[in-house]
Length: 305
Image 1 (cartoon, rainbow, N blue to C red):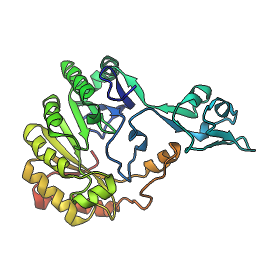
Image 2 (image 1 turned 60 degrees about the horizontal axis):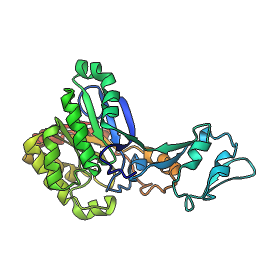
Image 3 (image 1 turned 90 degrees about the vertical axis):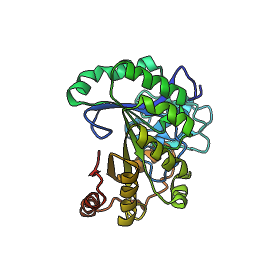
Image 4 (image 1 turned 30 degrees about the vertical axis):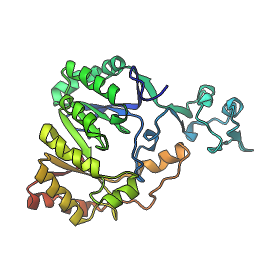
C-alpha cells in the first residue's frame, strides 16, 4: 500500500503528553516519509516512504526463528546465538517481524484511518482543554501525504481541537495554501539560510522553504524551529540573520532546539549509517548567550519549545 493512499495515512508514532511540540499538553501524530535527508536526523526511521524494519537487539533471546523465516536469507545466527542481519539482502518484507515473539523485530509504520487517529487523540481532550494544548501533526513530513493530511486536519477542527503543524516547509505553494486555513499554529523548521549548505546537509534547496515561510506568516501564527548544531548553523551571525528575517516577516517566536544524538542509535536499528557523527550541541552557556539576540532584534527567542 502506498503512503499516498487517501483512505489511510502512514504513521510511525502517536506520542501522548508532548510538551515540546507547541503550547500546552499535546498529542503528536508523526507521519512517515520525508523528502529531506538531514544528516543529523533524530528520527531516521521516519524518512522512508513505506513500512520498514526496526531492530532492538536488547530484546533478542537468540531463538533463531527470524532467521528461519526470512525468505531472503538476510538473517543468520552466529555461534553465540547472536542475530546477524545482512541489510544488503533485506528487502523489508517484514516476515521476520511475525516470527519474533519477543518484539526485538518491529514493523516501523502503521496505516490508520482519519477516524482511528481522531479517536486516539481525543482520549486526551481534557488535557488539551485544561492546558490550552491540542494536537500537533509532525513527521517525517506531513505534506508528503497531502490529501490525507487535509482530511485529518479538517476532522480535528470539527472536534474543536487546537491544531499545530510541524513541517520542513518543503512543499509546493498550492498545497501549502490549501492547508494553512486548517492550522492554528505552524511550526516551521529552519535548518540553514545558506542554500548551498542547506542542499549539502539536507539534500534539498531552502528557496521553497523560505518563500513558504513568508506566505505562512501572513496567514497563521508561525514559529521558527532551529535545530542548533555546532559548526553547522549555531554561529552568532547566522542566528542573528534568522532573527532578523523572523522579525521582518512577522514570525511570532523562534525556538532554538539544542542538538541531541538520538539518531545515532536509531540508525543502527534500521541498518543505516549515521551521516553526521561529528554533530554536537553548543554549550549551555553559548546557547543562553544566543537568547540575547532577541533583545537586539526585537524578536522572541526561546530555548526548547
